Image: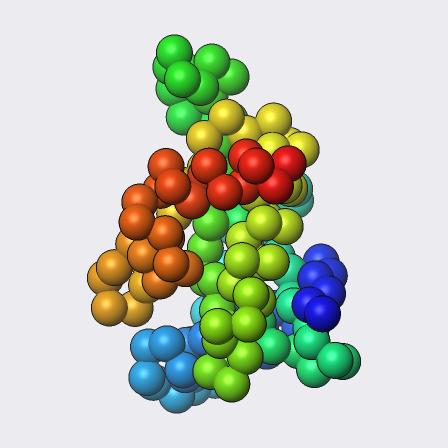
Length: 151
């Protein structure tokens, strides 16, 4: 069973950020890069605009993800203009293909919907492919149908 909890403290967030940088981008995060990330979150991320989670399985932290809440121009398919970007969906290699990413994405989508977001955008994976393909969906509409059924 996968449990998901919100991450609020900057040290936990930076710990996961370090692992994502090392594993996904294949570089060691030196102290300057980590400090730049820390300062960015402290000084440039407004309260309530980011939501980060960590997934655990059998008491072991196995993945993380986050959303950035923002606004765009209102449109017919998003009259409020509120939207969210799913970011940094990451699952440790040994926990992949066990539903962890789906659980993380589901929690983040729920949070975005609770905040009134009418659109949810996805980032790409490290190799440039859309996130939804790495989660096993053929397109974003297919992924959203899955989450619409779950809700």
